[in-house]
Image 1 (tube, helix red, strand yellow):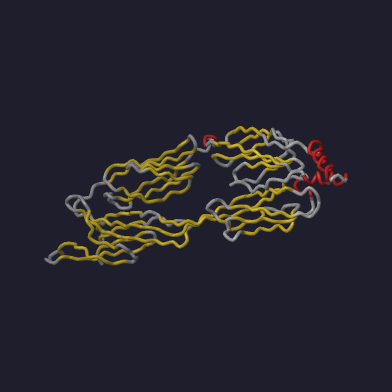
Image 2 (cartoon, rainbow, N blue to C red; image 1 turned 90 degrees about the vertical axis):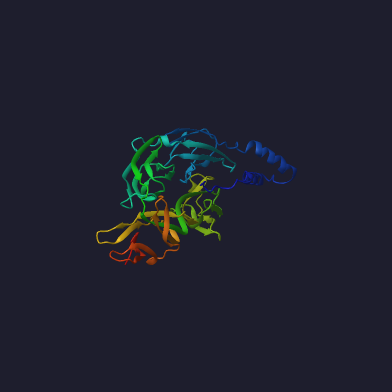
Length: 433
């Protein structure tokens, strides 16, 4: 986000008024003539913002070819404005990450004429320190059920370090890209039988690290019982970012009382939560910040404390550092996530399966989770047919009538219910009491 900048300055009328008034030449034809003389003799040359750039890794080097007395540099990465020093032939600035940045120079002469120039610079990811190789630790691909029958759910975990982005290739035609590094813990369901090479590649410029694992999914055999749990999460996602903003205000040219008011805007799609001065600013008193009703902007106002040297040079910019907290609120509705598991008979005789739930999303208010359950059985043709369903699953739940076949030593059919119990971040499904 660009810095808040002073409005186009007024020309040097104050100088004319002082000189002409002192000479008594401020009116009529004489005043007109004298004004023309002042424009040619007393008025300084217009400032010219001119500089050349070169990139060295993650740094930009600006060669100063400007003419002007005061001003500032804006490097386009939300860092504070840097005061312009006409005696400084070179200015160097380091960026934290690759990207395209707008470098802006604004210069002003002593009668407040202004000129600015903006140059785009490209900081390439290849400039990253070659010692910071991407790393993938703790990479695992594990089935959630002891039997991997299509559709089969796997839990994948990893921790990615020193990477700009990570790419998942699940071997079945699906590719997913995640920005940045961090911990990964997610569920992935493979719909069809087959062998799939699962790969995770972490990229950092031209460098990459890769981990892979083989996944083999079997076709179901006749009579296979499978639970299919679908989870849909909704809510409002609240994202907050802290931004450093520098307000540039031209300092007064004399010691007379003067006030200022400047407007700063939130990033597109964000609102302002808080704007506070980052430090005490010499030369300003009664500094106030007023948020707009819609919180998309704020007005910063104050009075000069009477010290024209507050801006280091009379007529230069006074730089007021601010800390801004901005917030973006968006509706979150994830696509349904599917988790599957095969029912198996346990040593105690119970027929059951355990299904892990997707991780809870972070920074979400008004969170709601809806679940649906279906128990399916594979027929002789290899296709699953639903035998028990709960379109709106509320836990704990007991329902359905599952035909277990004839009871031993009896001609009667054994009909058992299906029970679903929430246990931490898992759902345990049991057939029978």
